[in-house]
Image 1 (tube, rainbow, N blue to C red):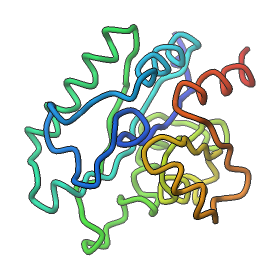
Image 2 (cartoon, rainbow, N blue to C red; image 1 turned 90 degrees about the vertical axis):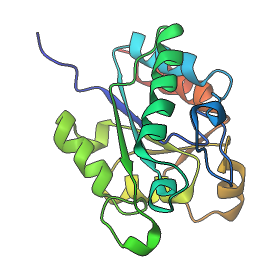
Image 3 (cartoon, rainbow, N blue to C red; image 1 turned 60 degrees about the vertical axis):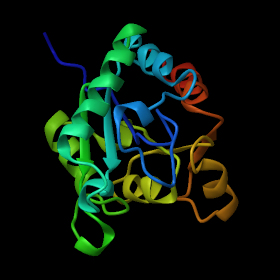
Image 4 (spheres, rainbow, N blue to C red; image 1 turned 30 degrees about the vertical axis):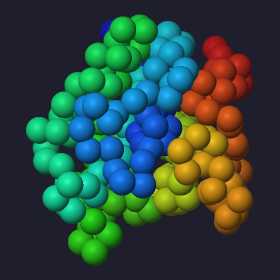
Length: 185
């Protein structure tokens, strides 16, 4: 069986779950945006795998630890599975901006790890985010970029300077419907 090379890369906070300026620090604070998990299920049903690329500087800031992050992702995976969805991998950067690492978006290190792990072609793989740094990281490697207006998306849209060709969607559900309508085999 040939593994599907079809993949969608999502940011987490503000795209899949409600975001907070105070950080999402525990499973109790992790709340799915209405329709986001169903959107993941719809992408899966159309043959797409889903990977997450998420800056999680709350770890580097000491706001929560790996056990808390794992518990949040366990809750997310269970909630996605409950509606027929599956998240194939979660990539995250635990560093703060001061660490000057290569994996923290807007740098492209985390997305490069996803390319290497899934052996995908960036040109065929959408990156969906709510902040400019999500889009900038994707654009660095030639991914098509998609902004959702949930989370920080409205602010990102107002501030402009998005990578050329970025498509804008109301939320992850709208992205999934639009993307699948355009790319259905």
